[in-house]
Image (cartoon, rainbow, N blue to C red; front, side, top):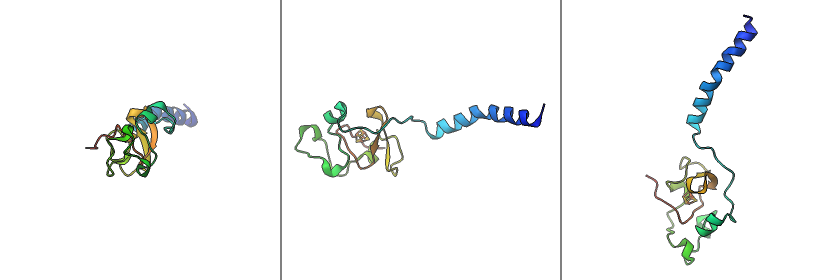
Length: 107
Ligand code: SF4
């Protein structure tokens, strides 16, 4: 077997291992950004910044100033990540400083 063919087959054999390593590091396939006009986002008082939350709006009634996506259990990224996928919105991307009425405390 020629060296170039052997090298090619070796790299080809490493592809599944590379895929497994990559999928462990990034287990969540993120969708695009969550849009403000998403009907579920509107129903759950989704806001890009916590300063935009109007607690007098009944949809936003659960808001507390200490809450944001970064400290929400449904935020599927490290708390220090500037943005990440949200589980309740089918892994659409939300900013760390955003919020919605489905907030759950992170463990
Ligand atoms: S469920 Fe949590 S992470 Fe998702 S938008 Fe609401 S507060 Fe942010």
